[in-house]
Image: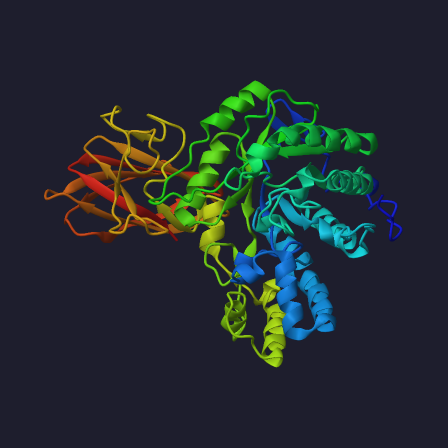
Length: 543
């Protein structure tokens, strides 16, 4: 039995209780769409608030001795002592995500956030667990900020009691999925979700409850042993939540990192949608096929959502967003920020001497306590968004908008004679968008590099078109990186309805100015048609 260690507030103030027109409405499922109370379709495009309430070792540049929250906590405690460590963590959670982050997320055009929760922040471990006030207060603050800045919240149980994966990502204490082994952990999870649902049952800002993140991977053997317990647990959780909250959507993830949906046959709740995670880590770059999820969506007749995508580069970000949106699948980019990176919207600057802390987590020498304390104090300042580095190119790639660089292989997703035209429709691309006939060449010398260089090859009368958005109506300068065969190539370039003819010569790659063009606020299109010769196109720059 869980002992209530504090009195929960009677519930946060509902948007319905706030007078004014600029408010969010409850969301619900309607066939394969998510809609608001007026029946208007809502496309959820958000970011994951990872590393805030559940620190992940890779975002700290840590090794095996600091690969999950409890181990990171031990590292901090070992280096600066328990009292200073307690103060550090309280400050970290107050600094890492603040209202300033939420305001910025909204300003950049996202409409939702997915906070990753560690159950230990809400419920103590041990024989007689008690609820922890801090975790609930942090979510209360997040919901209030999102209400103010008009963002939806999908509450994600990233680390369930006992652990649902048996791996580091859920803060597993013994690298086994004890949630599925010990009934007490299932009882605790049910009680925790009921507590959360009871608090937010009247809060439209909360869009959905994500019951369990990435349960039961195959690689560890957990899926084979325990997958038969997953649907019964989902059913139990949903039934208990519905006793206190009949309104909020519930999202269910498949086993094996969310992506195996073989257990899903018929929805057991009228307001549920299904989730997979979309990480395109192939080398060379390639888009993962989502046909199996589209087929399953048709069978289930529910919305489908991608709870996590990211951790790659701008070419894949642009392609993923475009691909998912073309198929009516919303998504949440993972994560909003992390340390010393160039592939998230924001990067936390690495503190001085941080490499010594990181080396300690790999079995290296123990840093001096004063040095460690200075490092951790610097991190507390560096993680504030005002002190982070913003990558506009990353954000614009996620949002498929300009200014930015559009890789040639990321032509539109509307299909033959709408986003591209080629003469030979039987031959397929060897490396990228393998189900389509546009010829895409791999230009990278190293096929295993993390970000690969690819180009589109077009013959006479063939064309590709690129769709993107602009936040303003204004003039942009367009250029392209390209090369031709031995003979010059002739191009016709349409920017919306304006046509320009260009002659290109030379077999070396070069960036060629295309001209200045007025783009409108909202959607725009660039089409490149080869009217003579042979063209290889690497990218188009719009700035």
